Length: 462
Image 1 (tube, rainbow, N blue to C red):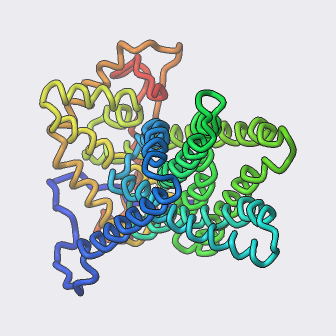
Image 2: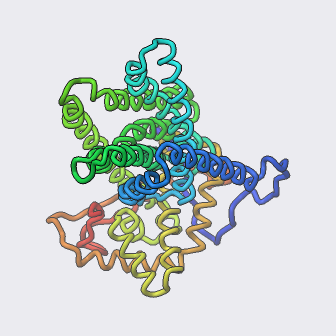
Image 3: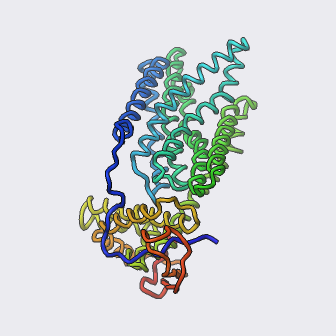
């Protein structure tokens, strides 16, 4: 049976984040040094990949490819950001992921693929066979590994922001979007150069055909492959710290699946005249639909976790009774931010958004603790999150209460929602004993029903 984290104590005021003692670190261990080195690496990779692509496409081809390749990027990034709205990660993670895919991963892929294909052509004296083998075997392995490196880096060094499947999907998807952006510049720019030589233009041109296949039909191809790796890392993030084998094998399994799907996609042109369309219709589209359903279902489950875990902090006095409902609905969250913006401007709306994000992180932390998967820093992290909520309560609570009151006017679906949860009150408080041990003593129930105080509110409406 899973053990439950201790019953959170009633607030007496924020104690502030724990661990205030300054740590003396070597200069190379300081955060600004690491960030500076990483930024320099990505910038250099970007300059090199820019020079390589421009050399192959020419200046005019590069500009045409850039203008066409950028078209699907805002839609894809916005889609992944939408999936991440329950517990939004920091923008710097997305910027890093996109930059890694567009610069570092693309540079690794171009250099490694070119070298491997040239070596195979020399060894076999068959350039056409080398190109086919390079596209179906070498490219999937090299490209998926290069993209997976970004997911691994976030998983290792931004672990606090990487807590589940959705985080893995978002990081992997944005990385692959950046990679596809650079690759599309190369392919579209090269196609434009070919059309310049042959004099073709319009619908019958190579540029138009390349644009249709890569930007219209399959802008989701690279994100779809790499998302499999992200799901592997996401499931690993949900595993306990002692499940070492699972935390290693699941990401590797996701990477292998990504390579396999990528290889099938690249090799579809060798399956006959209609092989590409057959693989697209029978494999790619269903896989895309299935993964989309999985991610949306996971997002809904995260909202349910928020509704189920936060009442513990209502009983303890950290949250108002209506807050678990409001924080468990994306629509109510949006209404709360709009109310805060109307009353206090952008600063207030931003504070409410942060309050929502910290409350969601708190719910996920407690959920992992109840399942025995929280880390040794459970108490410290819980205290930090409660401190952040307490700082913003004066701005956020009125906005969330307004959102729940406004929910009474939303269309109902013929059923109410009741919630009850019991908590024992005998375990040591955070910081006074075991961070998440069995709860003993008397039980305290706290329930919410359809009759009071917000009868028309439907928390499952997102």
